[in-house]
Length: 114
Image 1 (cartoon, rainbow, N blue to C red):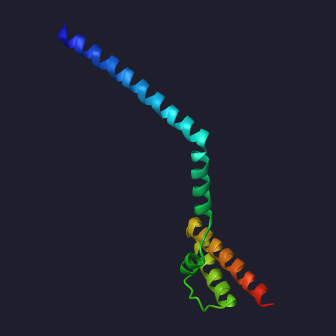
Image 2: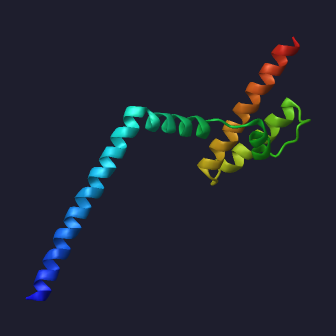
C-alpha cells in the first residue's frame, strides 16, 4: 500500500515538474522572440560561418603573403584536382572558397592601384 502511494506521488510529481519545465521553456522562447535576441543570434552565426578571412584562405591554399596571383591559381588547381579525384568534397569546397576570398582581395587591390 505504501509503495503504491509512493509510486503515485512520484509519477504525479514528475508530471507536474515536467509541465513546469516545458512552460518555463516556452516562456523563455517567447521572451527571446519578443526581444529579437533569437534572430540576432541566428544572424550572427550565419554571418560568422560564411566569411573567410584572408589569413584562413592563405592557410588553406598553403601560400604566403608575397604570393602572386598566378602562384595562387596554380596551388588552387593542384588542391582542387587532388580533392576531385577521390578526395573530400568538403575540402574541395574550402579550397574553392579560399580562392574566391583571395580573388576578391586581389581584384580590390588591383582596382585601387589603377
